[in-house]
Structures are given as structure tokens and as C-alpha cells.
Amino acid sequence: MDLLPEKPGVYQFKDKQGVVIYIGKAKNLKKRVHSYFSKSLVGKTAIMMKHVREIAHVIVDSESDALLLENNLIKKHQPRYNVLLKDDKSFPWICIKNEPFPRVFHTRSRVDDGSKYFGPYTSMVVVRTLLDMIKQLYPLRNCNYRLSDENIREKKFRICLEYHMGNCLGPCVGLQDSRDYDDNIQQIESILIINMKRQMKLKKRLQSWNAFKANQLSLTPRCITWMFFHIQRMRTGRMLITLKSHMGL
Image (cartoon, rainbow, N blue to C red; front, side, top):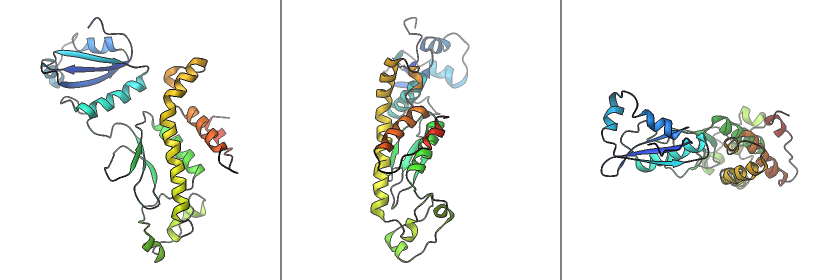
């Protein structure tokens, strides 16, 4: 235990068979793990510690990285003493729903229905910032209508307030075709994929410039704004001036 570093990371408790029975995160690995042995334990924790025969750990750069790694390891190993993170409700995801004229929204539950999920994110502020920018860039529907070709042809739906507010282009009444809508969805997918892939690249690049602290770079609204601004510049005729508001300018 004395060899544990005083750095952020994830620790794993294993039983005598080498099976992972508990996974936790820590801002300071040494202090957190030591706390299990330096105080009177009760209940589930006390029972768990009677089975611990080995301790493994992984060092990460920040608390946010520890959260994500903990989440992924718990889903992989399903330790018997972890109860809070055994499902996918721990962190928010951005979902592109598998349906005609897909909706884009945040969720804490992943459903195996062919929908696409991006994340997990450690901050709802980041998720809301991303979704707000997507909404400004791409008018999408947020209704629960089943927009099949047959339903649209039979005019089962009426235009709603979202259309009049400019938040939707009216696919429910045939004012926007699926090809145009799906093209927007593909661009949104690309933006979300770029966001996830660029987290570590941005972190390393800006860290070398000493512009920000490393643990503030991966998922901040400012970095997302920077990314959206450059993506938007590549789109013809629609410079998003309102991005300035997200940067406090």
C-alpha cells in the first residue's frame, strides 16, 4: 500500500481467485485505498474487505479520466460489490435515435435498438452546450411522432410551434425530405465523433502551449466552441456568430 502513488486513478480489489470484486476511483490513490485499512468498517464494506487479497491500480491524468475509466471497467468486470455504476445510467450520453428523421437528445440509459450513442460525458454542462450548438446549426425535430412515409403522405400530422420558431423544418408535413434531414444527421455524427477523438489531441496540444491545465481541456464548453467554430467555417454561407455567446464574449 505504501507503494501507491498520490495521484488520481482507479483501484481494483481482487479476491483470492483473482476476480475483481470492487472498482473505485480516487483523486489520491494512496489516501483513498489506505482509508479502507485505517478505520472501522461496517456493513457491505467490511464484508468486502474480508475477501480482498490483491489490489491493482491504474494512474490517469485527471479526476475526469478516472470517472470514465471507472465507469468502463465496472461495465466490463461487473464487480459484485459495485452497485452504483453497474448499468449505463452513471453518465450522460448523446443519442441519435434509430428512427425516420432521427431525434438527437441526451440520455443516461442506453437501449439496444440500433440507436447511436456518443459519450459517456462527465459533465452535463458539456452535453447541453453540444446539444445547444447542434440545435443552432441544424434544425431538427424533437416530437415523438412516427414519421413514416405513409403517415406523412396521409397527412396525419400538423405543423407545430417548433416550425414557426425556426427550430424545425417540418418533415412531419413533407416540408423537409429525408435525404436533406439525413445529410444533417451525418454531419452531426461527424461533429460528435470529432469531439470524442479530439479530446486527447487537444489536451496534449494545449498542454504543450501551457494554455490551460490538463484536466480542464478534454471536455470544456470552450474547447467544444473552438471545434464547432472551425467546422462551421467549412460550411457554406452560415457563419455562426452566436458562438460568441458561449464563450462569454
